[in-house]
Length: 166
Image (cartoon, rainbow, N blue to C red; front, side, top):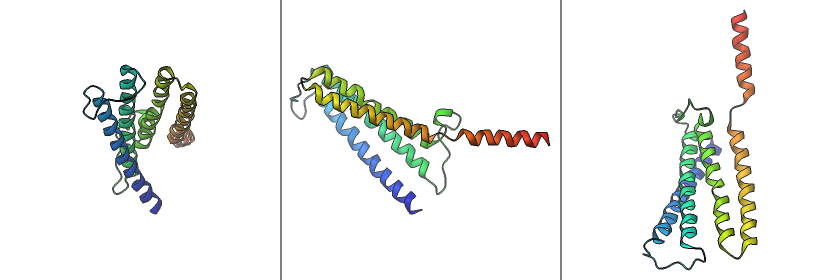
């Protein structure tokens, strides 16, 4: 029970961090249209600059929604029903949260591509893009680990066949 409580505690802080991340990214994105906080000194073109911050906003939203889905999945007093139980790929809140995390991490690949195409320090951003690809692959493996075991389905089907044959 303690591990579950500490995991839920961590998820709540991750959710708060994701919300702050989304809000600050949105403020910088809006500031690119109407410089409330002053002009930016980015070397990117205005389009690339706005595109990079829009990707950050979308990533933050995906991380926030994924965190909320994981909090629902870990809620055990009383247990909550899954949001989309009829849809195979998001049949549990844990699976939904893991897919949202995957989409949130995949966004960093085009984010790095914006900087590779728009700056002179390409080696740094190619290295960061490699890290983004590795993290995305790791998150994909996490998504695959969240799927229910197919062996349980086969055992269940075999049990039903045995019942009907007897």
